[in-house]
Length: 234
Image 1: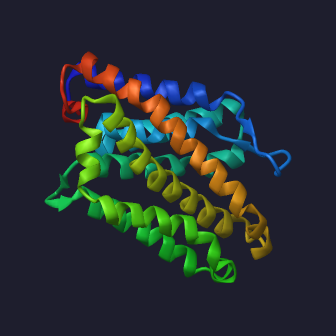
Image 2: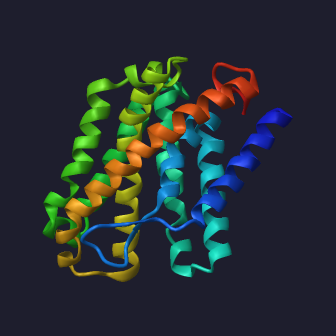
């Protein structure tokens, strides 16, 4: 790992922490709730820094941001940053340890969906995981083609790759958050039922922002690092 890559890891962790302090967008129909815009950075972090340092940079950025804001409960959900960054990184890499990246990403999302259905709350609100299953279907349909899009120098192809990887990535993070919330607070299943359309709208917006922000960020970082595959630097 060279000095430029180390600097990029530190810079992106700091950027994540700062953006995490900004107010989110209010969610229509859910008073007092906000869309955490910083989540849109996580797929780009995975693509830029790879399956290890991408999630690490996002996680430390999330943890530092929560500590700086004094959000003790939010700190419990800092690990959510690990999953979307890792899934995007796996989809960017054609293989990790000899295993196709899309298969690893699909396996992680499948395990999280299974975790939902192993909980009584998940069984009671079984339809809540429908968008997550749809996200898994995207991975199974496009498989290794997403890697080619994410590695492309074309803005349109890269943006499409970020859309196709960003939705499964953010849905995986959402499912992990649901599981943590259930284990930590034991809510009634009725808590999740009315949130399905709100959650889906939030995740679609995060996906769109991931492509909008991530496309110029990744292309600029590639020029800065001087490598076609930025993750190779780390």
